[in-house]
Image 1 (tube, helix red, strand yellow):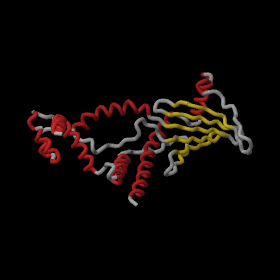
Image 2 (spheres, helix red, strand yellow):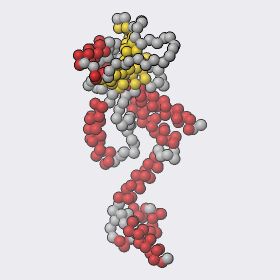
Image 3 (cartoon, one colour):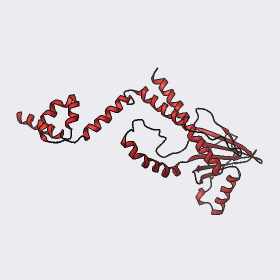
Image 4 (cartoon, rainbow, N blue to C red):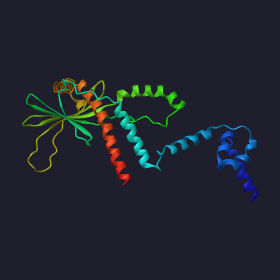
Length: 267
């Protein structure tokens, strides 16, 4: 039994070598064991730094033990982001009417073009990594040292941000054209296109031929369909404005969602 206790004490002393003497003086719970290891020579302060970071987070009240405080922090940071986000006014030549209902995850654009009705459903932006706000815990040298790298990453990932569009072109009678598009900053892609027949009368379920994949269409047909959408207002100036619009909307909806969550957990 004595041998087991001795081996355990020796292992504990060896494990605690990285603890510095200065940090050991302030760690009450470690004094007894640290005193036994004091004769082992100089120690590094790596473990103490890690412990201090954990303690700092607990002091901020943003951990899982303080859910309302964590939610309040998210709301405050999102509101600060919105306060500094200057939403551009709708351009004078913007070809669509914007229908934006609070609490919804999409915005609808509508316009008439000759004898056609154009409707565009714009989804929330797809940003790699999701929206992030400034973290108040990132202070000191670590924040300053990584700021330039973060800026470079933001520049590199800006081109990956996009919005999804569902464009429907219809007339008073007859079928509709439905386009599924992805709008990036520098280009608009057509991912799919369907000819949708009006099926007002109920009956047996049918499985109509949907045509080939868009990328399998002849190149001249693909180019013609891009021009077709451009003439109806699906252009880079339009989609880039809607991208910025949807980024702001996403943050507003996030604040509203977090507020509902805060109200619920505090009841």
